[in-house]
Length: 204
Image (cartoon, rainbow, N blue to C red; front, side, top):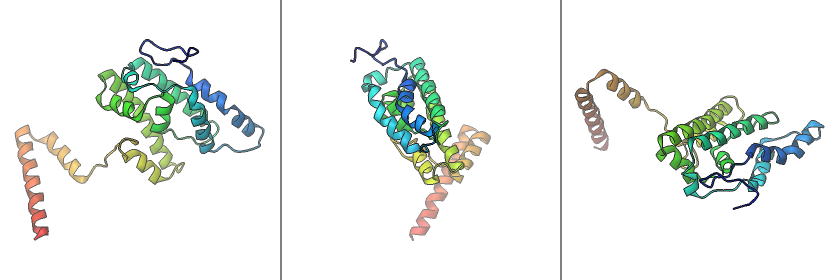
């Protein structure tokens, strides 16, 4: 471990990630201030990934031990960075950017979100929802193309694995609310049988 970095008890670096990124972006910010060039989102991303070497990656054992407080601190720093970047360009955060910012792997992100403790899941859901919300807004406002937003929402592992609801999902939700468990199961079986019969007819 780097002696110049303070680590928490579980081996996670306690560093000011926003300050690292702000320092790296200063030449670009100054260029825009004096009117030399406009700042594009890809400029910010290139600087971000260049500066990321200052943020140590942690192994999965450390990442999976992160507390709610540690995740919340990193999230607040991330929100601050996103707000800072959007003062200069239309910057849309992604899951990959958060992972690099937090110094964790995609495996750790997905595992904490799906299989962590209740407190870890609560913290990760807030992070995941923020990123999804920003992407949906960016797609709706034309900041990024709809297909890019759709991919980030639906892709597994690298995205948020969001499944679009079908009309059948709505019917099932209504059945759950209106019927007893026994009647609900019976009605669901009838729907399945009807679907199978229709499929068999189409095959014939």
